Image 1 (tube, rainbow, N blue to C red):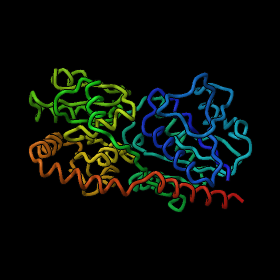
Image 2 (image 1 turned 90 degrees about the vertical axis):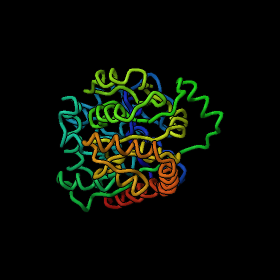
Image 3 (image 1 turned 180 degrees about the vertical axis):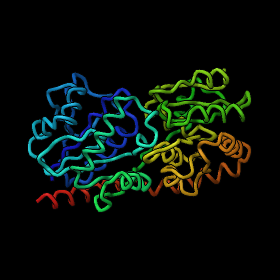
Length: 366
């Protein structure tokens, strides 16, 4: 079966979880050996950063991204096959739904933009809303990374019979103590630290993370922020109140990120909403205690292997962080439980489920 997958998100300024999950899924699908995979993108002179480079051949359409996105979403042209040749299934991996003569599978990562439109730029709102509308009308099947996203898709009018839950996986590599220490030395991290990992954008709840840390901070502890600047988020006041105790690193390559997870005292990720919450799974895979949000997709990921808090309750966030920092037995038990929990998520399992969706879509299209 030949499948075309959109990979344009690998070239985005902030690739984020969509590019990460697409690359990891393609890598796992490629290991199966029963699919002929081809990526499709806009025209680019250079490949994307190594960490987000698709592990499949990529065919480019002869227009830049902005033009391609507008043409796909509003003119429904050009078809994917112009770049890829005939395919059996097309997989939209990230909200910009391409036209095609083949059956369409679409991944809807989350619908947070419907509930909190003010957290997005006007252009991104327009792109996301149009992508949802096209997926609702044209996708044979819609893949959701969590039941929370599936419920949101159902509420948004997508037929439940077309929805398929495919949780993401996690990939880690063994780290020697010397390598981990070298990474921390590279980023000038010398004290114990609380780690946040993610793009700086409103739904990540960083102002409350900063305030919660301020309430538990002491001179021997710092807050490390790993992730690029995003949009509509001004952290200057919160950062100023923690002068000398907070260290923003910007984008961190995946290999370095593993060492930062492994060395953290606790990972704080009380996001207001997620489609999945990959940093929670990555932290647990490294045996690090996690504080994350109750009532969201991250609770699905964490299960009972993390401390769950109300993400809008700063006192609760601070209290959970403090519990882990002050109770070594609790930290050890959470880390051990997280490792066991993370072992049940794999990209090979994700690929197995996605391949089954492709087969369903191809069969329905005959």
